Image (tube, rainbow over the protein chains, first blue to last red):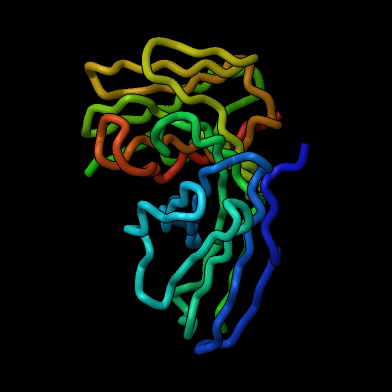
Amino acid sequence: GAGVSQSPSNKVTEKGKDVELRCDPISGHTALYWYRQSLGQGLEFLIYFQGNSAPDKSGLPSDRFSAERTGGSVSTLTIQRTQQEDSAVYLCASSPGRGGSPSTDTQYFGPGTRLTVL
Amino acid sequence: KNEVEQSPQNLTAQEGEFITINCSYSVGISALHWLQQHPGGGIVSLFMLSSGKKKHGRLIATINIQEKHSSLHITASHPRDSAVYICAAPNYGGSQGNLIFGKGTKLSVKP
């Protein structure tokens, strides 16, 4: 079956522009996660969705970052007024949501979107 | 909040060698994850374990809940095992919160 897909695979933008990153989770997965991986750094949690609601937004680094999920499926991560420090690979993952907790569910990762802010 | 530490940061091995990567955490947890990040960037979940040992092919993961420590072993290593191996634990201990990740161990297996 299809895995997690993300688009675009690469995005180059100018400082100050807004960008939208898309994630299509595995069909039937109720939990969805966004992570960020900066160059040479570890994975950093951004936000977690269970269905359409986001019980944990604690990882969003500033109010320029927002995410939504509609229909319990596709999710969009939006970064407004991009800054150079936003340059990173943005990874999406999904999980069945049956584990009772995001940390006890096996997560399936997408290929990521590499964002470069000039 | 949990703190997750991995060692070593980098590891170079000859093909066929037995590999051990270590992960320690500061707050008791219900499950620990091991992930593999390929050179191209793709991430695959290898194991999720809460006690004892799990084995998949040449990969073995162990966890000692009392010592807050886990190890990932690779037997008969092969160049295709070259990747970054990452451990992750619940951010607030138990099963609470999302995952917090170690910085990863970059493994290079030479033929």
